Image 1 (cartoon, rainbow, N blue to C red):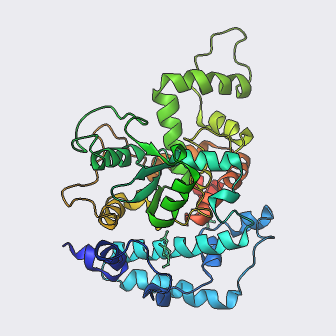
Image 2 (image 1 turned 135 degrees about the vertical axis):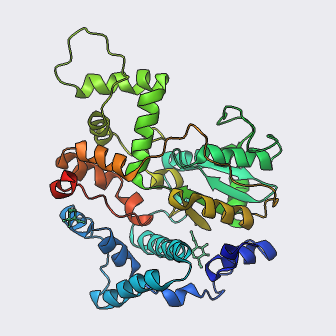
Image 3 (image 1 turned 30 degrees about the horizontal axis):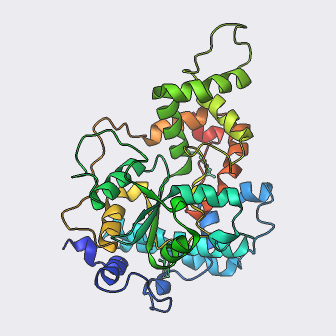
Length: 368
Ligand SMILES: *[C@@H]1O[C@H](CO)[C@@H](O)[C@H](O)[C@H]1NC(C)=O
Ligand SMILES: *[C@@H]1O[C@H](CO)[C@@H](O)[C@H](O)[C@H]1NC(C)=O
């Protein structure tokens, strides 16, 4: 056992390995002593998004917790980061806790569906098409494109015996040998939602958009034809009349203009908000991992579902081009301020529910 697996924050894993998969709600969690309440407010403050949200009138419908309680919490958070022995683990653990509480608080406050049957038919269809099922290990995985989903699909195929090992070099087929919740009957869906271990993975929302943009418009011809041509026709002024549009040179600004006009519930899955894909208010996920802590979080899931010890989450592919902070900064700063201000509210639930700070695209910041 690695030290990581013994720290208190991960004890949930031990619980799930040795005992029942479902935790009883009252199973007193140590962490509730670490970070009690008022976290919605904390996250919004931490994200520097408060002004934006006030501007957009987004707080009107939300209770604002009394600020009296917040500063000690912030101090506590800062302190525990500084003094914690296993720095990264503690940070990751606190992040989990913040995310967990934010989701519970925000889902309670918004008039959101509390189970999948009260979603609209379109919302439910999208969700069910993104949830993969494994009956042997009794788990559900909601996949979000651009958040290591190919690697998770590999893991699922290995677990179901369709693939020999996660390292077999085959091109990933995103549909074959996979069971989607959408292909099951309502009572089968209900049973699995109630009794299986449910997880999803999230990523910084703008980084995910950039990743989709660079991959789809930089590399995939069918996307250039289907979306690129249309985007350029709509948003590129002064393009030569009659000149052939190939759609292979869509700029990030044009892509964002296109996103602004799209309905989040009908978007292509690669840029649809993670919230709409996985509906974290309607499905109570047992674990929400992040791309930023992919290795550790994936191992935690594999333990929780009692996967064979020999199975590990695949390494990143060799052709994988990471998005650096500098790259993201560069692209975000090519956007006019006004576009950023319009774009963020579209993805605001992804930022706030999953506890990501809003990006700083002020001109001061972009000058650097
Ligand atoms: C949030 O906390 C509850 C109660 O401890 C737990 O049952 C649940 O699995 C957690 N959810 C996530 C996404 O971490
Ligand atoms: C954005 O960055 C600038 C310059 O780095 C800084 O002065 C400013 O306080 C930041 N704003 C926010 C909201 O973080």
